[in-house]
Structures are given as C-alpha cells and as structure tokens.
Length: 394
Image (cartoon, rainbow, N blue to C red; front, side, top):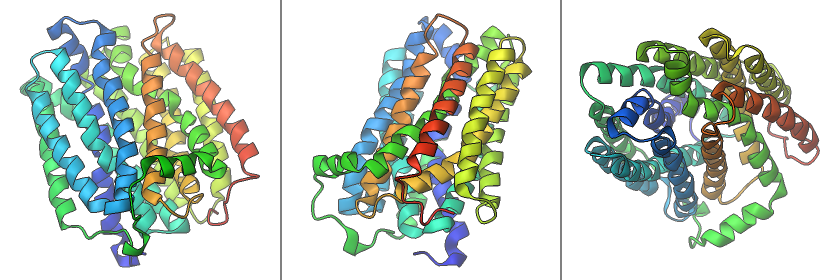
C-alpha cells in the first residue's frame, strides 16, 4: 500500500486521469447543436457522436482490464492515451458527421484506458475506508471538469472555432501521458496473471454473485445523470431558449452538486455509516426525479435544481458503491475494475439514447428515470446487504 504522505499526490494524479472522460463529453456538448446545423443532420444522428463514444468506451474497457492484470497498469495507460491523442487530432479535422462519429469511437477507445486503470490503481494502492475517502476526493476534483468544460467549450466556440475543443483535449491527453510515463507501476509483480484469458476472467466475475449484483444494480442510479448529459443542450438551449453561456452556467450546477456530494462523502467517511449514506443517496435521487416531474417543464430553475439534487446524491453514493463492489473481489482486480466501469458506461449509453425517444419532453424522461431508478435501487440495496462483504466498509 502507498505511504500516507503520498496519498494527496496520488489522488490528484488519479483525478487528472479520470477527468479525461468528462472532458471528452462535456467540452463537446455546447458544440453539438452547432454541428448539427452545420452538417444538416437530425438530432438523433448527431447524438451518435455521444452514444457511440460511450459504447466504444465501454467495450474497450473490457479488453484493458485483463491486459492490465497480465502486463501491468502503466503499459495500458500509455497505449490508451496515445490513441486518445491521435483521435483528438482526427476529431479536429472531421469534415462531416460520419468522420466525427468514427473519430469519437477511437477517442472513446483511448479514454477507456484511463477510466479502467484509475479504479485498478486505487484498488492497488489503498485499502478500506482510506480507499473510499480517495474515491470521494477523486469525485470532488473530477467534478471541476464537468463544471468548467462546457464553459470552456462555449468560450472556444465564441472566440475560435469548434475544432479547438478537440485540440485542447489533445493537449490535456499529452500532459496526462507525460505524467504516466513518470509514474511507478502500482501492481504487485506477484499478483500478475500468467496469461490474459479474457473469457475465463469475466466468466469468473459473472459467477460471483456478490460482485455482479451491486455492480449491476447500483449503477442504475446514474440513469437520470447520464440522460441529463445527452439531453441538457437541447433542454436549455432549444426548449428554454437559453444562450450557450447560460447553458454552461446551468450545467455547472449539475457538476457542483456532484462535487458537493462527493465532498460530503469524504468528510463523513469516519463519522457516519457508509451504508446509511448510500441509502440516503438513493432516496435523494428518487426525490429529485419526482420534483422534475412536478416542476421540470416550467422553467430552467424548476429543472436545474432537482437535477442538482440528483447529482448531489449520485456524488455522495458513488464512492461508497465503488468501494463496496471492489471489496467483493480479491484477485483479477484490473478485470473487476474494468467490468464495473463497463457496466456503468454501457448503461450510460442506453440512458442517453432513451432521451431521443419522441414521446414526451426530455425533462419528463429524466424525471421518470430518477424516480424509478432511485426507488428500485433503494429496495434492491436493502436486500443485497445480507449477502455482501461489508466488513471493510463502515
């Protein structure tokens, strides 16, 4: 395990890597309606640059986990970041939506290495409530990315052009690569697998009920959060008629809620039962969904404030949920971390696609997701406590 005096530096490093994914999504959001108009495509076609990014991201995570258990975390990060940087360059040169979709698929494939390895490195380096606290602080720092990213994307659109969104992302990826090249391998050489064997590792995880149940069920709580990511430009800029800058401000409330929730989780790590905090988070998501159904179609604030509550509760529960899931495994940590993240982002892609269904307003869809997933996960969570290993979760 890592020395306590180095925890802050490692936490910042892991947060810097983890921010690759939200930057790739949220910097691009203000440009999405703009590019839809430039290329003359329908909203559902333009949304493929988001949903297929998530799909690519999720699928590639499955490859990175077992590979990292065989070769270590550092080689996977180096390869993934190199692909991410090249994909950013291709995105900035895209002449049409077809090329952009292909480039975004490659960008998701590269960025997946960071999301997968952050979990695995955290599991390598920290234990117990310390790991939960580190997860929470990573969540706090990461929330800065979605808070700042839409504003930065809007600024680049207003003063330069949309291409600069991906150039800036490429520079960020290059800085991350430099840091990775300087890091020491965190995986214990004695824990390295003697082969990759993708199917054997994942089939073992699929048979592990204590791992699979929380990995599947607790990721459902993010349904409204991911739906909001895809729908928010259309809700604020088209439905409510706000400017790009106002959209960025309202979107920042969502990220601020996530940050405050993660910060509260970190502060209460030793003072309040993590299991109770998780339950409160699920109740809060359901309450936020209900409030959106009541007030979300009336005004921007009527939608944004309940959505902020959902984000706050997700931010509070995610570090606990992630820690509990990883506590259920003792070997193949990279594979377990990757599969957990795969489930999260695959479900994210599904929830984002749901917002394109033209049967009611996007706000209503998000409200229903918050209410239903909050109540369903709360009920399942209380039932799962009988079979989960929570001995290291307080």
